[in-house]
Image (cartoon, rainbow, N blue to C red; front, side, top):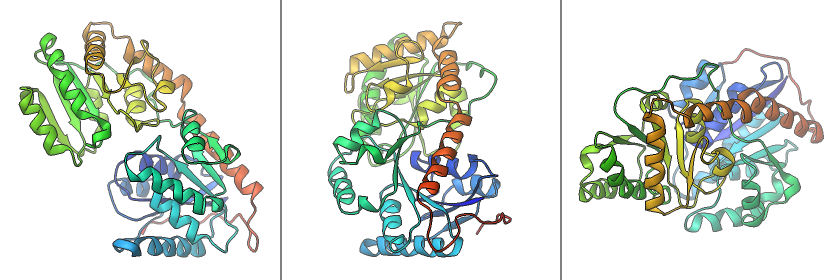
Length: 379
């Protein structure tokens, strides 16, 4: 059995964090003994502990001391747990792993969860890859479209990239359609690139045909205050629910008729869309990043050009007509597509096989790569 160390920025709910937790909980327990190192606590800890995965949370100092402290924590975990492979997610853990593994032969995989950046972050990541990317054994991409961004924008070598498309567990039985008035759910951080403002601007056209419809916005972020002001200025505040950060995404989807995503630039292969498909809910999304791989336009939802208010409003109306017309098509088709094209057991098998290849191709010198199973604990 091989030990696996998973390093992630926090145990809060987010795409990279969700992916890391799936790695730690869904891989073959006869092949892998995972442990988790995170740099901030959060609700995902409970999920890991329930699965018997050891969890260590290291609080980091601020400013320029964060990276050296994170690297020291990675090195301490490697010395203590002797993993055969280290998997990391997000910029701080990526850099910490690269620095923390210096002088060792422990292989690592860096999972990329982005398709572009806003502002200085893209330049920062390009420089990080230029300066430290040689220390990475393998890069993991979460959809096929993402490879173009990783090679063209970040300069990564194609032969160092492996693609394992994101997946989520899908129920065996088709989930029931929602009851009650029409509900459109948007689950996204309230940042400018997610373009909640575009959804709010499209909402009056929806209300004109569905006056009892509700728009539910799950998430928080720097744009929260201005979005509230925009809803008020558009005269739609009474039909918009600002839910804040929520831990009950499955319950929100059960109550929703439709999921909407409106990102104009950064969107890779979002779990929000996968979870909506698993819940048999149609998806209206902008045609960006890896979403064309995910949403079958006109079958499981609708893809629209980014920053096009009229197209977004028309797609929302089409989706609500489908969801509330008595014989929904988008949701059941999305559920079937998630089961057929992105089955969760296949995702776990592909990751299992990828990890096995990495440790076979990069054996650790000076100590064995396998250990006897020990009882899992949590700290």
